Length: 333
Image (cartoon, rainbow, N blue to C red; front, side, top):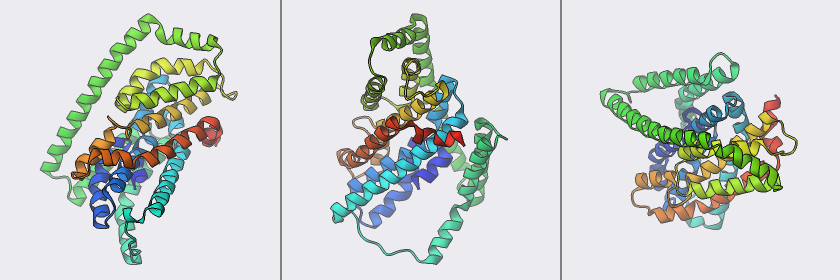
């Protein structure tokens, strides 16, 4: 469900917030442990940043002058691997400790059919946005506008968008936009300073001439992203670090990849590590969002619950770092 919502949302924070209100009451009703319930929703929320369309991927594309559509295509298989990895982790956790979740009967066919019909409009919005981008008849901005309009119409028809809903939406949009622009302004000032000092180019040249193995440089950058994720917001991380790390990566040789392949491959890897930062203590934003929605589950419990999911994330990053073809195979189609 988080992956599906992420496919029409593009924001991990919005995915975590929405799924907290939708899923946590049901998980409570079926006696899932607080740790398992909140950790699952927090980590599932990170799929919003990986499953295309993705806001951070668009920002990365703007910063690096890369193709947004190609980045979206490249993110599909890593996103699917992430979903499967999380499901495997959940299966192992419940098998090891049966007290974390109750066994519930399968829903009848009529109930499943009714639920399927109720989500068809959302599937329609997803198809309009994605087919519009990949089909070439709308750029990402135009497709996003069409998707937003379609969601607005659905909200009016289904009764969720009345005057109070409009007021809440406008206020939420204003707050989020103001926050993003403050971060953008700060990052732009830093980028101007970096451009004047030529620090990114000098750093890239130093690394290129240092003799360090390219994979060692990549590993150091990814570890640094993991550490930054503990104390920084994902958007700020991308805006502040890509101008520094991107020239370094582009100046190295990885498996004979050309410039475009290298740029897309590094973008997906960086995005995945930034995604992990959303659930790493002490400042993982998804942890705070889910904990606030849960109310009575301590933040420390949620933080302990995400550790097995983080293990899945680390294995996925290692796999995609060692085998770029997994990320790039869809581009050849």
